Amino acid sequence: MKPTLIQGNIKRGILYFAIPLFFSNFFQQLYNTVDTLLIGHFLGDAPLAALGSTAAIFELIVQFCSGMGLGFGIVISRFYGARDENHLKMAIAESLILGFGIALILSIVSCAFMPWLLHVLKTPKSIYSMAYGYIQLIAATLVITMFYNLAACLFRSIGNSLTPLYVLIITSILNVILDTLFITQWHIGIRGAAYATVLSQAIAALLCFGLIHKKEPLLVPERKHFRIDPIIIHELLTQGLAMGFMFSIVSVGTIILQSGINPLGTNIIAAHTAARKWFALLVLPLGTLGATTSTFVSQNRGAKQWERIEQGIRFCIHFDWIYTLVLTVIVFGFARSMIHLLSGSTNPIVLENGTQYLRINIPGFVVLGPLLTYRNALQGQGYKIYPLISSGIELGGKIVFTLWIIPTLAYFGVILCEPVVWSLMSLQLWMSYRLIQGKRANPFD
Image 1 (cartoon, rainbow, N blue to C red):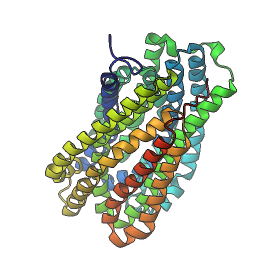
Image 2 (image 1 turned 120 degrees about the horizontal axis):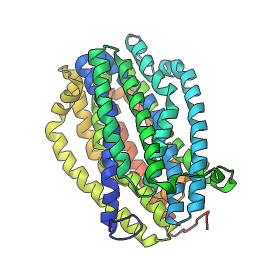
Image 3 (image 1 turned 180 degrees about the vertical axis):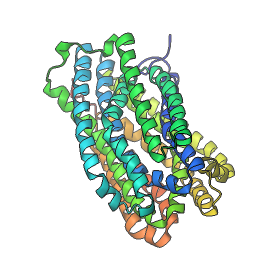
């Protein structure tokens, strides 16, 4: 019998869920990494800088959709752990309605304010039109992003992380093909990367919902489940918006930080873009265990298995530390080659600054791993305020660095920002988790 998150060996159960989730996240990240690689190698440093100048905006709007999906999934996981099929299907039905409405509103607002936001970010005039063409298309299609993330979270809420992986493998291959055609053959430019991403995510969403209908009847609500239940709607909205705003606050901080990076010039933007793409790939194991912790804690909370929750959290943190140690050794040896591989640049300013970013930020994973574990554990137990406080700390820290430290230290101030902020956030989340450790409140009891 395969291990699950609510019974059997804890380590095997977590890894059985986390490994497919990791590869799902990897292929999801591959969407943007392939964009970076092809644009850097075939279009040059200026288009690469244009892509990088929108990275924080992309992260803001997409991460909000991802956070909403994860928040909905936490509620659904809780009903699954409690074996409450009726409420589970009601939560799914209401998630579909809420997800569509929120994504549509967010898309309209994003498109309306995009020129203003690019101006606030001090996007260089030389790359403005390319940056605008790319990010406006992403913002206009957020309903697709929301429904893909929601479909994947439905599978994961019942412990199935394999099916979203299979879908992502297929659509990631499609994304690579489309990227190559649009950028290198049809010469659409940076906007072609956006077309490839949107088309691939649309197909991924259709495949996921098709497989749900065919393979997972537990996740298919009937007409009777599409009715208003104030308690479930309240829990979905509070959990979903808490996750969405938590991710958004983090992304707002990144946008503020980007406003300090953009005036440093296209070479620094290109260096930061390549380094951040590597960061996004290398942090995936930590993020994956964090997301696994959320589902693990939520299911076991529904089953009232409190000691099992503690054991799972300890395992995730120990895994984070071992991974950080191994990765730090690798990065110190190969960081410069990694930046060149992804950016295609031979410019020493790009290579040296990108290398320095990796060599300082990657060892910071020693505090980032526990941060993600505790934050997701708190979310999984239904506590929404403490993770939001941590996001507020991150936002405040990035404002301080952008206004006072980066003007003095230039890009080195950017490099120092996140490790310092992570340390403060990790301390706050650890203290918060210990503070509420004895609480066993469940709004559905």
